[in-house]
Image (tube, rainbow, N blue to C red; front, side, top):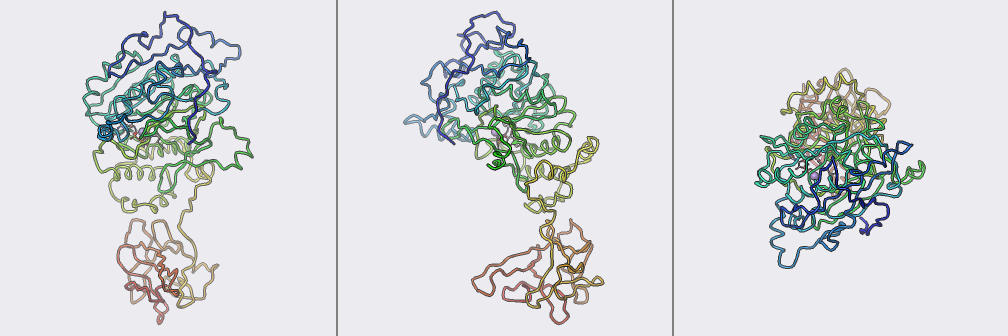
Length: 573
Ligand code: LR7
Ligand code: MN
């Protein structure tokens, strides 16, 4: 994360017009006291667009992206945190600051200290300020939901949208209060936001969780495009038009800004590396992965070019409102937090859309180590349950990879709710398979449908397990022999065709049973035991998952049995 630099102001459209007759006055008159929390006035920017629309009537039907940011010459350039710099807790206030950390799991004290409308550096890559967009872009509704968000942080999020979005494109900001407990959100929020005609507040009567809260916001939205944001963000200059431009070009594009980092410790605004794709690793953990340098070079990808992403981070994106509903929105069965970004990403790609990161659009987000609000049920179980719903609906035969990577294995049978509607939806939308997604959208994901394929060789016998007439015996190893072929599945079954090795002995011979993914009794662990005895290094055993029993060669009958695990026993290797 490179050190922040003060940016040049040359390419910002500054508002020299003093014309005050306006129809689209979302902002209170300059000079009116907005200081409701004692931290100095908020600078309310009057955009040239409001008084002068001539820039929209160029012959080309296009105009240069509007940056509309007077906060680059802020009222108080010396204020702490200004220009996105790190702020410091004053001497003697350290205890207070550390006590207040838990209000939001970040430095709440500093958030209260820095201006609500502070300037941040223009971190857009080269070329962005010169980019042109259509004059007839769609309007957008901003939807921000929150539960017990820190007041100054919520205000700053709203002001950054108001100050840095072209007013004619900003239809409304919908604040969805997800049944917060804090008094200021119950009583004070509405009063403060009344001053901004475009801001609407929706108080939910019970805790909906972020997924259903977003849906409640979407249901009352009137803009052409829905733009979802977290409630602890700062939108950077020119952030909105590049997102709307993509949706305008193709209504099935879902556009995400680059998410930059607002430090939880000192509130500094830090830019991030370019060329990052949103990806996931098993078991469906979201992450970032850089595009390899040779790919960038070969394809002459510019820093400002949109980046197609297998998945989105989740919190910040623009989507055509009607398209969002055509897709069936989110699975409303997802609870509280987590997994919804995977769900929407798979749905978009597999059902004909695209997900892109737009480098010319940048929004800062406070990254925290822990959720600052409580979960109605256990947090981990909530997220896992959501992910299981996603896996069951979207992953097809690949879902076992997901199950095989986590503790999800045992979650499976537990209640994840009814999925018929979601499965029907997928059918009625005629969505493509997960296999298609892997081949076309995320080819670099390692996704073999089984853990391993091959033979089961006994070190002691120097022979391989083979299946003849439904009995298990040994013969000379032959990797091409069909009878010796086994696969070891993600659900830990040892599978030969449709039969699996079971820890049950019939007449001294280990049984083969029809495979059943739900049968815990069929699961085995392929364990590599590293010991300090040279002969035993890489001693592989096959241990039953729930009983402490290992597969063992019965040399007399030339078959396999189970016995208590014994590291020194060569017949178990
Ligand atoms: O019950 C809830 N009700 C809510 O309204 C729980 C949360 N919320 C609100 C909350 O106040 C916040 O504004 O929902 C928003 C997101 O919650 P966070 O900020 O606790 O989530 P996060 O930033 O830790 O996590 C990311 O993953 C989430 C998974 O469900 C959501 O998709 C978040 O929007 C998402 N955030 C981002 O994508 C920002 C970048 C993070 C990364 C990578
Ligand atoms: Mn967040």
